[in-house]
Image 1: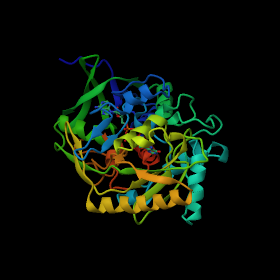
Image 2 (image 1 turned 60 degrees about the horizontal axis):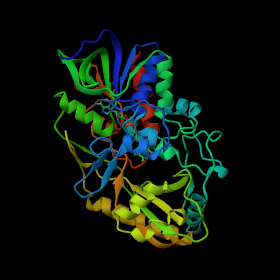
Image 3 (image 1 turned 45 degrees about the vertical axis):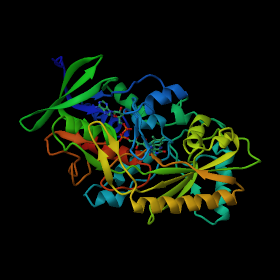
Image 4 (image 1 turned 60 degrees about the vertical axis):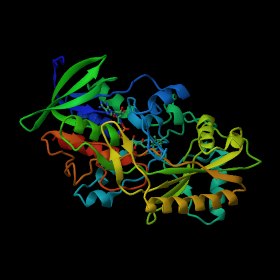
Length: 428
Ligand SMILES: Cc1cc2nc3c(=O)[nH]c(=O)nc-3n(C[C@H](O)[C@H](O)[C@H](O)COP(=O)(O)OP(=O)(O)OC[C@H]3O[C@@H](n4cnc5c(N)ncnc54)[C@H](O)[C@@H]3O)c2cc1C
């Protein structure tokens, strides 16, 4: 038996990552009564390995292992995956959304004016990113600083804690929007897992969720699923409103690493600079990660001889726009690379090797592929319409699931635009 809700909300939002937090904030700004249900914890970020592992490395929760032994990672916490992401802001693919009559340009303009977003000043770019940049420039590649959602006045030289969840408030996360929504009157219930959408007469009227082992109910005029590329299709399926499995994209990544003799580093913000080959769907960037993550890459491919070389190892990320495929099911997530995906990765790895060699690196090796951008599992034009509404009235999806095509670039800023737009529409 579930406990009935005492309050009737204007909107119930499931999930508090960039998609959910931006809808919540926009609705709260306009005075609507908002409830956010988040299965993860809202405990303050500490920037520790143990907290990050709880957010993103629990098998079947934040971490999903495919049959080919590759790993897919996402975050389970208030703020969603943004708590542990690399804070890179890529401009949204406006044309991709315009093809569905969605104009994200006005939201992008207002978010640009508001967010702490821009390239890092030189003093916050670490020696490894600088050396990789020199290698790329020597090869005459169009390497440039990437926009970061980081407050440079708070960020510290020689710090890498943003990767585990910045405890200093230097990295923007969806918690910033969530906090604003709460200050404006929204309610956040953390450690509350939505189990089912309540539907009456073809219209969503609430959500059944589990907290402290008890089933409860919340009722609302609108329900917005923002559980991320994996969470939302699963919840729709559990509610009997979607097929058992959904194909998806995940932007697979390979880390390419090489050792240099004259740097003693390893503590810096990853993805300070990079390049994107749009036609080819290949992105490259520096990716210096904390020692345990580097060691996991080396151990995974049997390079035990390299476990202690973290402070001298330059790491490049090769990320591709993969084909939509595989399956997100009720209890599994699985995807194998297509021949086209493998060819893109091989091209990118070849370029990364060249850059590393030009940067003076030796003993170059690569990791197995992994991924961190599950999306496209409830695509606009397929599972939802241009208003992000499902075939069930008053039931919307607003997260990486709705991205209509695989894109290959970091999606956070795009999701903030989509969430701001949906919040505006729902309060009209
Ligand atoms: C290591 C790493 C680095 C990254 N770097 C970048 C980067 O530099 N730039 C960038 O733009 N992107 C980056 N990303 C990806 C980016 O963070 C995500 O694409 C983005 O956060 C997705 O937002 P979302 O709103 O779709 O879902 P998420 O941020 O995943 O949030 C979904 C939330 O919903 C909750 N939830 C799910 N199901 C339920 C349920 N049934 N009940 C209650 N709650 C539920 C989850 O716990 C989660 O907190 C990175 C990702 C990783 C893993």
